[in-house]
Amino acid sequence: MTRRLSLFLLAAVACTSTTPVARKDWGALNNQTGKVAIRMKDGTRYNLSSFQFTESGVEALAGNHESRRSKSRIGMPVTIQYDSVDVVQLTRGNSTKTLAMISIAATAAYFIVGQTIDNTRPDPVPRPPSTSCPFIYSFDGREWRMDSETYSGAVARGLERTDVDNLDYIAAVDGIYRLALANEADESEYTDQLSLMVAEHPADTRVFPDADGKLHTVTNGVQPVSIRKHNLVSAPAKTRWDLTFNRPKGDHLSLVLRVRNTDAVPFVHLQLMNILGEDVYSWYREVNTNPDAAARTLRWYTEMAGLQVSTATGKSWRQHGTVPIVGPVVAKTIVMPVDVSNSEDVVRVRLESSPMLWNIESAELVAEREAPQAYELELMRAVDATGQDVASQLRSVDGRYHVALNGSRVVAEFKGVAAKPGLRQTVLAKTTGHYYANSTDDRKGNTALASRLTTRSTWSQAYFMAQYKLRR
Image (cartoon, rainbow, N blue to C red; front, side, top):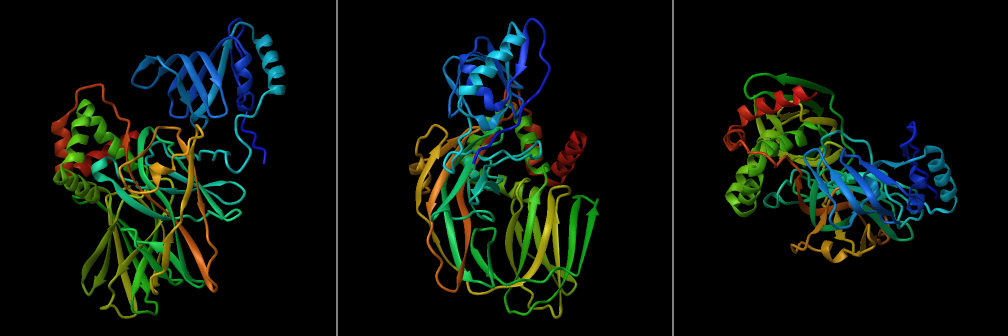
């Protein structure tokens, strides 16, 4: 299928013209004289005096790179991924001649974006200004669909975790599942394993993971008969959702939640990294090498940003677990087993978190069935933007990371298998990894403030929420 991307139209300036160039015409710039300015989606810029537009990206050969924090000269060739580019402009002497030459050259120019299933790039999806963690796009047989936001909150190697997530859109095409692992944030992402899991289960059931990645087979559940949301202003402040369900049939019940974080969660993390300043690397070293420090940090993040799940037992509440950070862009479905043995016809559930951090999209109370049969599919190949097969870096948890910078994309292929008679299949992505946000590291840090924030959760909650409100 042919995919033509949007045309950027701006006015040209007399004498020295700066002309925005349509994406379909970028290849024609290889035949032009002049300088090219490239503005990225994250606001950084490349001003290039020597360049080459190729099928895999822009080869920046000479010029400079400008970010919010620094400006540097390009000393060696750099490949700029097309997924990350917002606007391309050509600067040269005569605007009429420039436009004419581009128009003529574009007639024979190739389209930058590939047109086949294998190399068509998924279009980046609009998202909040503060996002983090890798995105997974699924190929549904016609187009790429953003389907998962994975290992959210694993903000250092010491906090690395394995994430399991339903893929709602993926479909086998000629027996092959395809997904794309993309870095669309201002960070470095380290993925140790990328795999697909297939769960087989009766047609009248569904399969979802719990917070630890264990798979659960559940029936269609009941919706809450009432939901009350409370914003408690006492210290520590809390947002609380009280849900009431009519009890469904079954001895083993679970809560099925479909949730997203707000963009306050990555905002809090980036604020903390910016407060650390140049000391952020000492913080990373401590978290990565000291298990006690990693445990303390995880506990702080859980207290600050986790979603606690409890059920009523008489006049008291019993906590069953905490939903970890899931990310602000793609909703995630999580199963939380609950003990309602003391409940009769009505089950009361409480969800609780720090304010402004969670969106509850849906909640069901369901009966559990026997655990599904599940197996992992073979990773056939995983091709990055340069055409290199990086599958060996992603097949197992072995410390051989695939490292992705902003704009990186890997297309992975898995060989599917037919479902057994009478059963249906649910496909889930399983990933292990961590990431590092790019923070302000060119100034002295305030380690005393950072230490206070990460050891006094009530105080840090008030501090970060005030900062978040100011930003909005």
